[in-house]
Image (cartoon, rainbow, N blue to C red; front, top):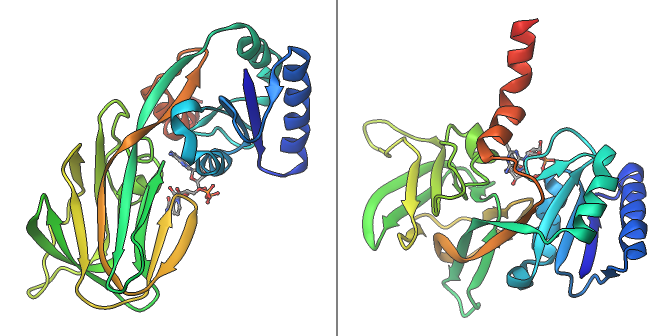
Length: 271
Ligand code: NAD
């Protein structure tokens, strides 16, 4: 099997990367950064997002696994103390794969500029440095609302515990193929009105955002942000592609949610 490793780049992660690489090549696995079947990220969730975007062009033939060198990661759920165990699993055990839905975003322009399509593992956010964003929000081709506010976040189920959660969005189990639209500080008064609740859209329900006021938009996909001008529309839906994670042991989503967000508080409460 061919594998590749993406490190956060700090001393500890690089050391773990070197050890894992050595162990796996000792087991006759081939290190191949171009065409890996397995991508191991060493660092945090940000490193796994980095690894995802590095290999986003070959999602069908790549599966991901994360070792975290900082606090418990949401995607990176193996700890450095377990690397011998993990290496043996990788070398000897046929792995199981879980697939999670992704977000597809297509940005179209008023000019001749070619449309841009990208995938996000966590979310895409749309903001501006020039005041509020104003969008005609369409769902399945019908006007839904005019949004005016700081911005919008469109997240995947596995990304629902990230930025979306901070915006008051719901946590969605990744077996549900959906995207979630959450507001960032919408303006609501006698003149402007938005729904004010997160919207969860199923597969095939496209959301189209049409800027009603020309702005230079800051559009982030996961941890990358780019600036776009002359935007005609932004289309969001569940992508046809999925991300594949390797599982050598069960780590149910709700256990991960509990361990990341509530377990410590409960321990403090018990003490
Ligand atoms: P970062 O280092 O600032 O990481 C932000 C935190 O988000 C880290 O603690 C990371 O573990 C956590 N995180 C990432 N994905 C997660 C997920 N799916 N579920 C639960 N926690 C998750 O930034 P980064 O490492 O470059 O990561 C980028 C991500 O940061 C973005 O995709 C976005 O979701 C998140 N973010 C969150 C907020 C917020 O909560 N207010 C604001 C900006 C960005």
